[in-house]
Structures are given as structure tokens and as C-alpha cells.
Image (cartoon, rainbow, N blue to C red; front, side, top):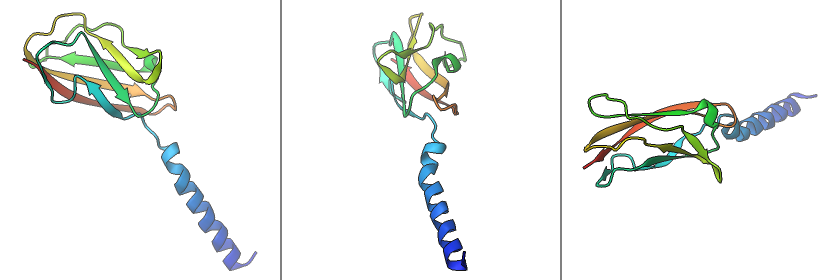
Length: 124
């Protein structure tokens, strides 16, 4: 093989690997949630819904909800929507009083990547 052929093969291999990279490095990112980040709701939600960019593994994912004084809100078992593998449903087992709440989440996507984050919302 000559220099030009070797260089061309390497260039094609690099281009192919870069094209495949988004799939290889995919992670489940939070796309939208209810209540929305920074929302001020008048009616306290009975459940939170978190929608991710790809399917998540509920057994390895979790959510905590805390109030402004770092008090933990009692939630039920976090589960994945049976019809949408990208959505987590978080039942809230106690009435939320007017306050600012922080939702901290961590998920493992179906391809095994871990991501985490948090957002806030307020109940008036």
C-alpha cells in the first residue's frame, strides 16, 4: 500500500468513527419535566414526570425532592411509564405546602450511561 492509500484509509476510518460517536457517547438528558423547571404552580402536583432524551433503566434511577429548608418530601416508588421508556413518574405521597422545591435526579440510560441533575419549582 502506498502513502496516499494509507492516508485515505486512515481519513475514512477517522470520518466513520466521528460519525458514530454521537451514538457511542449518548446519555439520557432531561428534556422536559412537570412541573417545569422554575415554574410557580398554584396547585401542588400529585406526581412529577421527567422525560429524557433516551430510554432509562428505572431499577438504577432515582429521584429525591426537598423543600427550601432541606426537608425531604416523601415520594412513592419511582417507575418508568409503561408506554414510554423515556419517562419517569414520581408519585408524591404528601401534600406539598407553599415552598420552593428541588428535584434531584439520577438515571442510567438503556445503554448503561449515568447522568444526573436537578431543577427547582415552587408551589404558591
